[in-house]
Image 1 (tube, one colour):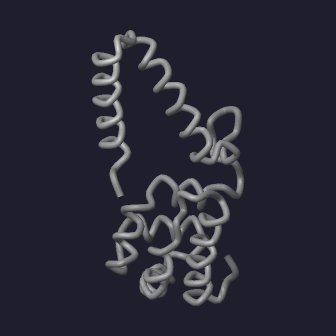
Image 2 (spheres, rainbow, N blue to C red; image 1 turned 30 degrees about the vertical axis):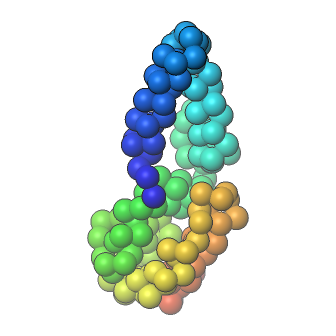
Image 3 (cartoon, rainbow, N blue to C red; image 1 turned 60 degrees about the horizontal axis):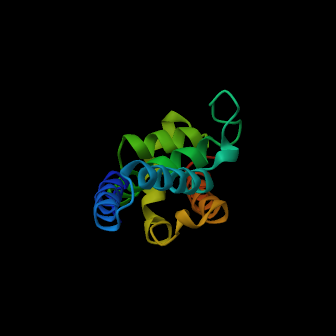
Length: 144
């Protein structure tokens, strides 16, 4: 997976080359690229997860967390520990005294979680969170 910053660097270089070779103005080309990038990010970043004030809507915290931290979260899930896994467990409602067991349980779900293409939308993102919740349920008697 190409990091988003690297993708933007490649896109900016491509826009520069396009502008130089086609006679287009750089500003017009950049405006078009910016509009397309904004539309893409709006359609894939869970616009419905945010309030008008820019806060995460109630119930969307897990989706926002996974969408923004997916790569590092998967790395830590594979390791069976880490700050992001612990934070994810907290968001899912796993009590502090059950965190170690949650991290172990979610590590057992890694082979399933790594195959879920969350970039395909909310259904896949919810599937990822559902599998993680199952690990949380197995780690604590409370319901998440």
